[in-house]
Length: 106
Length: 106
DNA sequence: AAGTTAGGTGACCATTTGGTCACATGTCAA
DNA sequence: TTGACATGTGACCAAATGGTCACCTAACTT
Image (cartoon, rainbow over all chains, first blue to last red; front, side, top):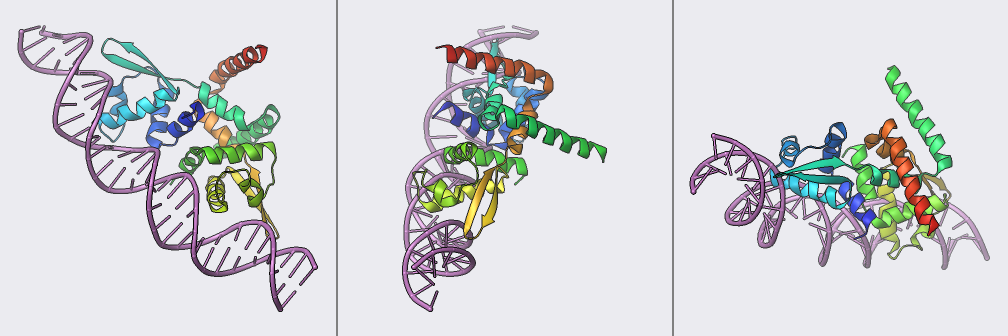
């Protein structure tokens, strides 16, 4: 399996995206802490975190018997750069910002 | 299924990513033209394009009996914005640019 | 040392997914 | 209008995926 295949497969599952959301809010959490936020057993959560780790979306640091998880944004940026060139980026960003501004007005 | 689920599921398959690559190179192609680039039957390619269309990653315009396909970069930008805030974006872009520059030097 | 806490492994099963095929519709060209 | 061309549908099958469990190792606590 190629690197980018691992990244996209990892992102394809809602539980794994939720884990990334949690780490985006606050980094450096343990498996047990993350697991408590998911509606599944520890084994399921561990499996998902392993997939994210293999994809490079999450990096880990061991501290005693704990495993701390951190979000790595680089693969996400590479997805962006694959289909949005510098020229298009300006237009798309403007469009998205406008959409957000309109939604905030409500 | 939620909108973002459709997008990520659509991106999870290498053939579909290849189709996006093709449309990134040149927009407005027909099913038959795209199908000739894939190592599968027309039915497989059509199924993949349908998935991309349902996800909003590809928009289509009918012209007679032909169906023209165009790449829509907005969902890609939204993925980016989900896990990369404005502050982090500067660091990550710098990092990625540096990496690209180093690779070009070789 | 003994109990508790954090995490890992491999097997297993239900469901989803990628790809093909037989068949069908609508559009263009001679 | 007849035939070729572009695309659509639903059934089908093999393979991959998400989740659980029984069982295991390593580290902290008292």
